[in-house]
Every structure is written in C-alpha cells, then in structure tokens.
Image (tube, rainbow, N blue to C red; front, side):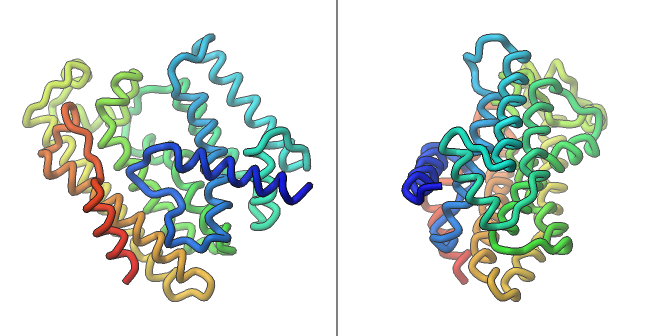
Amino acid sequence: MHKSLVESSFKYCEEIAKGHYENFPVASLLLPKEKRKYVYAVYAYARAADDFADEPGIEGGNEKRLALLDEWHGKLKDCYNGKTYDPIFIALRQTVDDNKIPIEPLENLLKAFRQDVVRCRYDDFNEILDYCVNSANPVGRLVLMIFGCHDEEFFKYSDKICTALQLTNFWQDVQIDLQKNRVYLPEEDLLKFGYSYEELFDKKYNDSFKSLMGFEVERTQKLFDEGKKLIELTAQTSGLKKLSKELKLTWLGGSKILEKIREIEYDVFTKRPKIGFTDKLTIFLSSRF
C-alpha cells in the first residue's frame, strides 16, 4: 500500500484519539513516537465501534446498532485478509502487521460493545469481571503487543490494571449510565447494602449508597494494587522501560479518580470526578521517575 496513504490514515486515527476527552490518557508523550501511531489506530478502531453501541441518534434502535457492529466485524476480518476500506482499517492493518497482533483481542472488544447493546443489568461481581475480559483487558494486551511483549505473566497483571480502569469508569459514570438505562453496580451488592434499583434511578444519595460505592471503590483499588507489579516488570525489561512510564501514568490516573470519588463522598449523582490540569501535571511528573 502506498506509504502516503498509510501515513495519512495514521494521522486520521490520531485526530480521532485527540478529539475525544478521556480522564485516562491515550498514548501520552511518554510513549515513543513510533509506537504512538499504533495506539491511536487501535483507539480509533475501538472508538468507532463504541459509538455504534452508545451514541444517540442512530435510527433503527438496537437492531441497527448490532448490524453496524456486525459490519465493523466484517471489516475487521477483511482487514486480516488484506482488504481495507477506510483510513481506520488501513492504519489498523499496518499496526497488526508490524506488531504481529492476532485478531482475538480486537474481536473481544466487539463482543463487549454488543453486550452493551443487549444487556443493562448484572447479577453479581463475577459477571462484571467477565464483561471486563472483553471490554478492557484486550486494550492492555494490545498495548503490550505493540511493544513486542506477548508474555502471559505480563498479560495477567495488565488485566488487573485494565479491569480496575474499567470499574473506575463505571463508578465515576453511574449517573451517565443511568441515562442509558445501564447499571453496572451488581445487584447482589445493592441488596447487600440495602439499596434498591428504584432508589438508584431516583438518584437517592444516602448512607446505603455511600457504603455501596465505598465498597466498590476499595475493591477496585485492590485490583490496581495487584496489577502494579506490571510497572515493575516492564521497568526491568529491555524494550519496555518507556512503556513502564506510560503504565505508571495510567495507574496513577486511575487511582486519582478513585481518590476524587472518595473526596466527593461518593456523590457521583451530582458530581463527575474529573482530573484537572494540576492533577494531570502532577501525575505526569510523578510517572517520569
């Protein structure tokens, strides 16, 4: 494929990544420049699919959303067979070729987006963890592969961090998800703390809700802490030291969001935790050392 077309396709993916606000960084300047374009390509692929599942204004409802995701899956399979139709898949094709990335983690992301379309309640925490296997964990594995790492031990700790990031996103976005009729707080936990779906949709902020959210935040922090070893492993591995700084940045950012949720006493109904400029600067400087 013509070099200029590939370069312009990577640039297109970069513009998509930089055009969306994220509390968690996407390919920060701590990553080597030659690796950032691959992360942008993966992000653009996932962002587009996520929009099919989430964005309002798609005529045809859930049936149309699922059809769009099926079409995206078809383009992914074509991409792996050497056929590409648009800039995202041109960049993605170069990414999977250069980094020997199998199709499975990219397909798993689509499974999670489909699940978001058809399911909006979860019975217990294990069901939430199963969702994270497809929604979050592939992202960390893909980033490791972009740096040439296909080690299962590294994947294990990456999964911990990525699951924790996904859970953190759930807890900060309780209010946003309710608007989509989605609840990621497990039903068994609502029952455990004496809180009901009715109270949740009424956005009733009381001691039961505070205890429930405190419980979720602390077990999410535990997952972050269990995954922290990945930062140490990558720092000690040739070729992964620069990635270690990005991982530390991501780990600090996720932990900071949990800290922000604690600071607002778990009132995520009226306040959305957000990392400000000073927070980002502090995290960035901390991650460099």
